[in-house]
Length: 298
Image 1 (tube, one colour):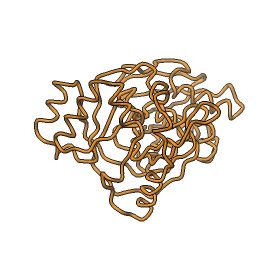
Image 2 (cartoon, rainbow, N blue to C red):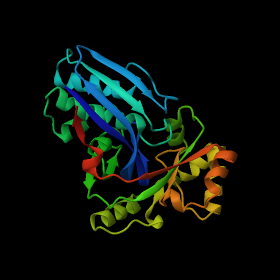
Image 3 (spheres, rainbow, N blue to C red):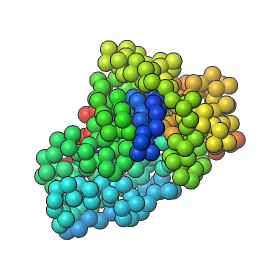
Image 4 (cartoon, one colour):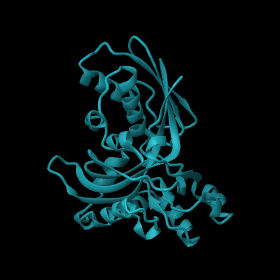
């Protein structure tokens, strides 16, 4: 049997940090959303766990072993099943730029967990897969549920929200690599950056009620830190805002996005971003849960 899945990137439509936990992690309240910028995952039967990685976005992607979250997820699922002899060949086709705050590694891990759950006939519930995924990475539980979700704790508590109508967005991917980015971004947080999660919860309630998304609904606690830490991003965001675009960090950056269609951007803006700041503009749209989590047998 061979299975094919997409592994969609994620955006944080709202991301508030409520405080630092005794274990060193931070608690957050976030509304996360899957989008159609996707990696692709193919799983097939094998005697041992094997991984191959290809695609047009390979910079910064571990090619083998447990440093790759997809491989780590497969190991974690075999361990949870209590069967070290479970094997599979995992093929990743990478199209999500790594290190941008788009959850590329986490969504690969989630796709592997969902796919191997079927390939190995484990029949685990999504709740059980999320428990396994939380040991692999904080964003993995969301990526298992996918679509639109309210996410709390350090990412392990995921509440699925109703699908929103497909909404066009524009992603911006800077040509920069920020070493140890997630740790550094969280280390830059201070109590002045903490909030009570009210804005994210209000956005979640708006989605439950089927209300349209507005730029004023969006928030990200990392916006100022991304601009301060990554100079090209600060310049690119300033250029976007001067052109009248509302832009927000993707997770802890340095990628960012605007809730407007690529086609409505000022004609010269994409060229100026690429020429002056090394930033690509990428057209995308939101995905519903069924589309984001589909598994195809080939």
